[in-house]
Image (cartoon, rainbow, N blue to C red; front, side, top):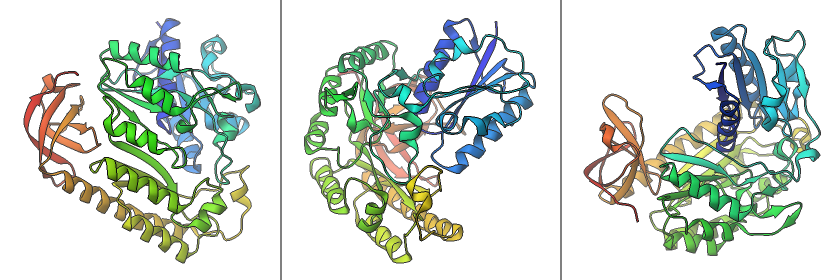
Length: 439
């Protein structure tokens, strides 16, 4: 039996697609193995949000060939769609598949002989604009990443995702619900909904047929899934009706990840974002009004062209005063084929690093304050299979990471706990473990 191994760079959406591609190989008679297990085929699913992702791709190829020098190496994903010829020049790469071809990978790999010249199969992104291919991750019994939407119609000036994934398109509500029921039957207790622009769910063949809120209501009726988490949603698409529904939902958890990107309206305009800071403040206030213990994560970019020190300090002050729980901080990275790459006011790399450092410190402060606000509360924790120094970890509904003494019987189990103390690692220790039965 031939062996195939995978490596995934980037977002939750990529992880869901890698898992689906893995099942295609399994159906074709391959054994899916760990990366270090001297595979016959390596599939590297790439990201291209930053230039670091491109460099990581090269490193992963080198590592794969270190474990298995004669392995057939195939690159898929956003980097493969955007720069196939650049990838083709990486030593050891045998095949590159674009966005329209990656789910036909088994058809393309007919001969595992190393190639003297890289084979490239890549079409223009327009070829995938009306073609939604469902995917979901399986393997981590605790949670599944379920892709319900792909592509994006938002032309932000810094982003290559519309070029790499095409126009916004979605699955049907019926298909998503059926897939959620199947996932529930497998024993998974948490689904994380993923997409490029998740809140834009409902477009098929270029026409809007549904709304994300309709999907949310339908999924809340699925039995057997204890938790449904929304991975990320644009503030202009996170309506009050969604927020109010989640507050009383059976399954949707009090945790939102809402991209901000800048706390300066001037910079938001240069980025061509579809909201301003006043709307963001309204969204956070509404969430906290109906779900005081809700966890709110924020994406922010530092060092965007034209961002002065004053603009950055405006962002810092905005975030510092906002009732949020943590930050995902990105230093702006120039990407070819974007408007921002040609903008004036380039921020020096050292200054980007300094601003990033300041916001990482702020994020640590925000997360600690949020965790401390939860001490003494009773909560439900879904425990995972990891074991470190005799401890295991899990997350509450509102995304507090907790630690407990390892017990194999607690893996993939919901336990009622009391959040007792913040430990030295920034996690919450718990007491009073009791099994929580399914609703």
